[in-house]
Amino acid sequence: MMFPMSDPAFQRARSAEAKQAREQAILDAARTLGAQRGVRDVTLTDIATAVGMHKSALLRYFETREQIFLALTAEGWRQWSADLREDLARRAHATPAEVAAAIAGSLAGRPLFCDLLAQAPLNLERNVSIESVRSFKLVTLHEIELIGAELDRLLGLSELQTVDTIATATGMAGALWQMATPGPRLRELYTSDPRLGHAVVEVEPRLDRVLTAYLTGLVTAPATTV
Image (tube, rainbow, N blue to C red):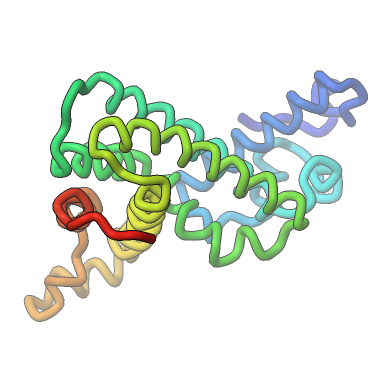
């Protein structure tokens, strides 16, 4: 939604409630633009224009464009974790393959989150304050702990195994999403030349296969002392 800067509703926020509403409008605009164009191609000016603000005014609410998208990444972690845990909690028992399918499907169904997962370590965490990074990392650690309770219940995974599993899943989801969305020209190249068929990636099937193999190995491997 576009708001004219002369609109009283979009004059400088003076109350805590108005400031929170303004921040949410900025996040909503960035989320929409990121889903439409890809996170990498959205500028601070694009976001400011979408909410009807000057860029300098937007910087009163977020220090950089990266902070905006890092906030959306934290939001994505909370939403993904909640949905995955709800899915797993409904299962009295599950095989490694079933857990892998649940994780892969839940990630593949969130293309913007996959994009953000790829962008976070590459640039989002590198152009924000240390406190912003700390807050973001604490969110991810908390959600991993919550997911870990379900992975322990269903598969008997240790804390370290959970961290490794979620790091593998989210890291691969981000990378595979980038590979799966190469842009029209590259996609045409990959599909027109049979020798390049391997470059055409589908996120969910490949992530499912890798996680199934990984979790099966964890569950069946002899116990070791870490």
